[in-house]
Image (cartoon, rainbow, N blue to C red; front, side):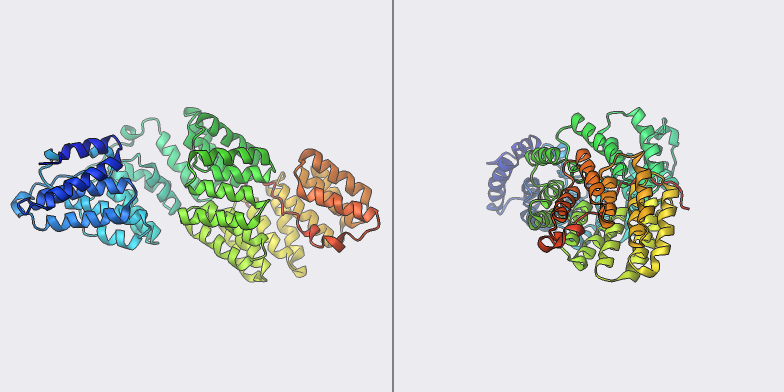
Length: 558
């Protein structure tokens, strides 16, 4: 043969896909010009070209090439195709000497076509291609699980994830997928001890003698069921065994961020970056935390680093959105939308988009974004976003339903209790109920500043400024938090105690020099002290204060 097939295999092994594709074009044209070339040989050559195209992300061309190969397979005499053997797989490890391939595994080719459709987000086409494959490998089963989950066929996804664990109990993405789909930890663990043919069982001690895998399953199930305190305990136990495990550190940081332990989460993310400065996973979550802390210096550096690593990832676009929110909200929104186009299942992209739309006074569109995040995986941020969106366009009933849903999903969460209180506080008739929910949240989490701030605001709305002041001053004895100083300053300003208000705004800025609410508060006070109406020029200043969440971990429901 004019073009040596084994050289394409060598190029693929070394990741030289450009050269493999070009050489493949020579190979295919050489074999197809000869009418005497066997269909088997033509199919093999086309598969090699298709593999090169797939690795170059030219998925349409890969699909077309693989289908041409399948067409030639139909012309191969049955006796020559009776021995089934896998052809070159999508990974370089299976790029073996092409001359040694004695038969073509059509199922493997269909898997490659399905993988190409999956890369193009063509879920239905991928499932249709895989349905004719009866005997599936591990990588085929994980693809089927993802395809069914993306299509909303959760029962099918669960079955395929479990099959993956029967084939290999260490497929951790299957563990996480099952946990997120609501499968109990004991049911996931039971899949480990079943062999793929279900004819025999193996001992859990053989698979996981030190029980770290079992603890990992339990931790992920705790996260999925919003039992964050239990999840943290399990992750801490695992980290004692694997102290520099980047994956465990990232998972722990994400849980700490959810329950409001922002300082701990930031330190955890910093440790991740010190161990592996090139990791991108969940770095957009880290960016959001830095924004909450108004640490724009570290945020700038983080985004710069992420861009230099891989500017095409969804996490990078979300981080860019976070960075641009303060400078140009429209640009920030475009970055959030781009993150979703890159990965339509990237939850932080939807959360960021929803927050930006809510600030832009587009609550209907914000609700759609938060609902999309909720459909992928419910967490407190999507619940909060939905409730605040519904309240913003007057759908109090829907807001209350969503807040109660959050409370039922997270029975040990003070944040969920506070969310129900927020809905009741929205109407004058519900303020007494709101007060009870806020107080219940504080009994559950005495250090939950979000509930303390909300209760202080409620006291102020009801004319109980003295109660608001005493509550905030009590918290200031134990927590030197800028949000407490801002709220206390606002209470003093509302009651005409301008000098006290100024003192607390200044205290907030000493703690956090980037606190925008404190800066605007001082600006308003200075105008008032000069006898200028502060609302004449900046009518909306006093409404710009964010609903600060100084939340801590959940305990028990009241």
